[in-house]
Length: 318
Image (cartoon, rainbow, N blue to C red; front, side, top):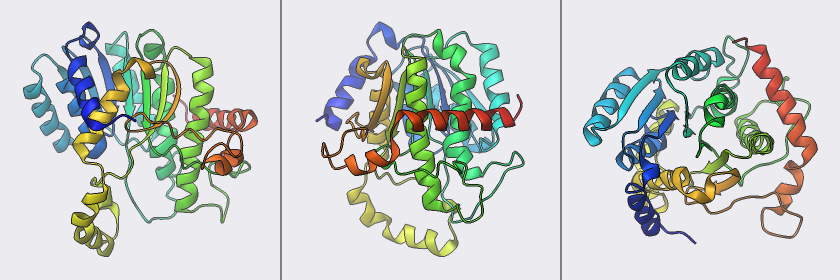
């Protein structure tokens, strides 16, 4: 089992390798929390990197840009302000990146917000929570595939929740039908569809590392979207929760480790933030995840989720 000490050591060693020079990376959802920590770790341990980071807050983006330039003067940093619940906005961002770059070594995606709100459709007809956790992330990956496909190494990392996959409503994958939507269903669908779509894409593009990673329990700023009583409760319990959580700095180190270690350079990986497998695609009786694995995984489900994803992508013209 890999521990944080060995991860930090490996990351420090990476900075001295020729591979650490001239990498191009895109971080989506990086103005706070896990994304920001991963971004700072990446810039700290690479040489002459070109980094685009996407977020909602212009003020946070400006501050982080200045911090990163001071942290690594050899870096080229550009903040792109965007509402990533809209696929049309994703298109604008990716077009801007594609116009400036000829390669892409890392696409790291961790956008999100916590809310108790019911289905909240964007003007594109997609629930915003599902968009930010799944559809927009897939749009980023698909739009940037031409850059990823010509790069080696190249990895796509989506931070969500492998190991918690579950049965899907195969007749309503977008949870649009009356009575099918719930926050639990959103979580289950977006996590499971990510694993299934990454399996499809890993078969089509085997030279890219497709990494669906769970961060474990990390205290971030996601609770800012909750009602006031829940935000207050979260603040009161935070000191106690820290004892059971992963420090945000360790999380950033772990995701940089996934971004750079040769082991994860190609194929599909369903892992935690330290690279330990949480893959539940196993035969019944093999491990504790087998029961849920039997419900959610299979070639027919991979194909069905991919068809659904293509339909949603096509519904919003580029």
